Length: 356
View (cartoon, rainbow, N blue to C red):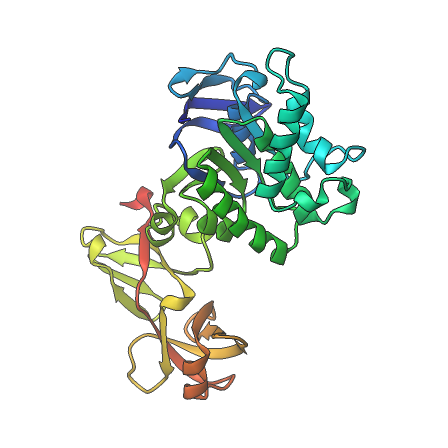
């Protein structure tokens, strides 16, 4: 099923949750709605499900206006962060619930229900827990049962609201991989809400970055990470260093150093911010006359394959975070307090549009 939202606007009192949002969700793909708390992503998910109604705009399912359709008529499966399993029912009965409450004309036979639930529990690899009750399960197991229950009614759309938000980091990582494999098997059109950028980039086919009720960027994980469309996207997706300065005719001056920024040849003396990922910084010992940003090594954390360095600029005392291989760090024998020089291998400059 294809999903489209057109010009969706939603207010809660004076707060604008969604500001004229239009999006398309391709059939059979897994889309992540990513952004900070309060950006509108859960409100949008609930509007698609029919659990919330927009002040204006349309929801189209397979090009048909579903705005007036009740949630039961939208063929949507919904998975919440906190499982919402019935504690007094066994795992089997939880998964069977959606099938048992169908109208008599649509309800499968008891034998069909048993076979369907058995197949779903095997799909989520928890058939051996059919007779247990939710309080007897781990958080990760409960979330997989919640997903099996959502799939039982054969939804045409699967909506997941922070599905792994209540779990610890290790379990989250395991379930992310599991959800991706499950989606590749089922190919049901899915949308999941998360504020975890690593989760979105690892699992999704398409990422929608949201901020303050607006869509900042849409694209594949590689597109949004490698080619951010705005300072917000750059800052939200992973660690990043910001260098403030002035841009004039293709050169950006920041502190005592300057960088060529040929994409901004036509800019005349305007504020600019350069964004550089920690792994895009080249680091060497300082020698007089060396080109780059002169820094002092304040702290090094060298555990595992990567060494993380906290550097302080000597010209304005701003902190810079850098990453290098532990092998190179050991080879250089860097010591805290040493003077180093860093050079961006790749930087992305945004110029203040008000000054251009």
